[in-house]
Image 1 (tube, chains in turn orange, red):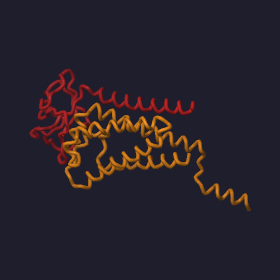
Image 2 (cartoon, chains in turn green, red):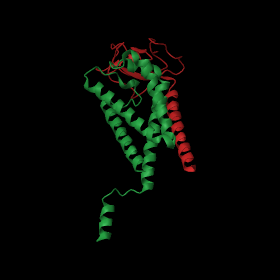
Image 3 (cartoon, rainbow over the protein chains, first blue to last red):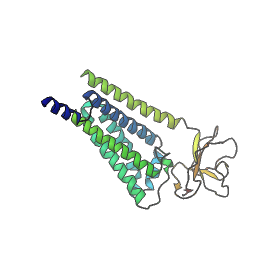
Image 4 (cartoon, rainbow over the protein chains, first blue to last red):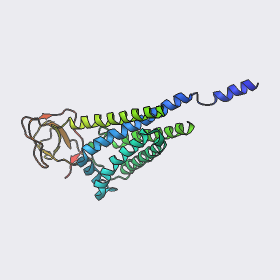
Length: 153
Length: 103
């Protein structure tokens, strides 16, 4: 009976070994590093277009140059946090925060009824604003998963 | 300790690769520029007439053609407001963005 109880208790948990959990967390981290470094490079190299697009946003307006440079710099800094194992927890928290912030900004822009700037200045420019929201939500969930896996480590 | 060094190295490699790939794909398009359809008297996207160059984002929602990419070949980098030459340029299929030009 005791053996049966132990078996039942074990089967109620997710069947993931520590090794698998570590691999999943590594994959999540590398996905974020790839995303942030890819988008940071694109924004920096097309900074005129990026800041111009931001200038059309009613939330950003005349702060477009500051915000335009701040976003890729923050993305690079978060990537560096994620690279170093000792700081990965903070990198994941920062990733969660940044992606949540981006998602809320996109949702506000779509729901506010304001005239939306063209996507042609965007980084992942083939997406519509609505698709971008779902894309970002996916990464918010990934960040949460990464934090849970890191906690269980 | 060794494991952490390996993880850091791999993370750095991923970061550098992603940054480099993005930079390469952005810079590679140095003869391809996005021109804005400022004159809708020429409504066809593949007609070079009616296009002007602007470095910023000049599109607004609403409309069929706001901008399209053109390979300008040997012409020099256009300045803001410059018209698209009508010869020696190649329309980039699939590059049209919907909307309308809004200065």
